[in-house]
Amino acid sequence: MLKMTDLVSIARSLFAPGKGLLAADESVHSATARLASYGIATSPEMRRQFRDLFFGAEGIEQYLSGIILFSETLLEKGNDKKLFTESLLARGIVPGVKVDLGTEPISTSPQELITQGLLDLPERLVTYKEQGAVFTKWRAVIRIDGDHLPTATALHENAKRLASYAKEVQTAGLVPILEPEVLYEGTHSRQRARAVIAETLGTVFSVLEEHSVDCASVILKTSMMLSGSESMKKDSPGEVAKDTLEVLLENVPRQVTGIVFLSGGQTPEQATENLAAIARQAREVDVPWPLTFSYARALQEEALSVWKGKEENVSAAREVFLARLAKVSAALA
Image (cartoon, rainbow, N blue to C red; front, side, top):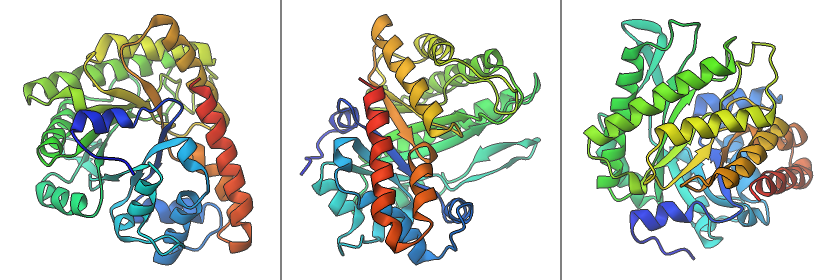
């Protein structure tokens, strides 16, 4: 059983060698869409089974240090009749929770999004902590469109909300993961993605400093530097790693606990290969933070295509999931 002591120790525990995070924090809407894409009719019970498919797989503690949950999952039990939070902690896997409440268009720039959820956040954090959450996540969404998006307004407003979130979370005695996701979707070049991610991270950490957020217990969840998914350009893992690490070294304070990468629409193989190249180059340039993964679809996709919502496919789906976890873990070595 893990002992949850100070925030820095908790944050560091998520970077155990060879381990990363499973992002299983899909909202009801997102989970419904995800399951529907595999022909699975959704319901509260089917969402619970969806979670249990992954959380109940034997041996995941070899590869996972933490799992980001959706708020409804904090109260759910696995097929073993134990709360998911309790069974995960018993295996040394730290439970966290997504605390933002989704996005809405910015009134002055309707093509861009701002994240909601600050108004009642302090009260919800108390509840989530009582329900077993140890860390939290807040996602901001940054869209690239040519040279006119993102706007400075979108970057600054999202950064301010990330900073306010981080401050509230630390005050509540929980670890904040900040996810300023620059979307993979679009026709932009890798160079354009690099410039936008650099500006995004620079803005976020400048605003964190203004809000006196203690970066020693902050985890950054970031996109990799990739050409847009509709650009027809296939970046090599070496190119992705070089640009990604250069931007991080230029824009992320050394005192940040660590950095986790989102898969953001990459295929499982692409996300694994790019992570391996980043980890390899990170050792060569001696980056000051530990690095790992925080993947959702890149870990789940293959298993879901086998499972299809059917009890008789659970065992085979879990084998596929564990095989992908092993590959992603090996990419860090």
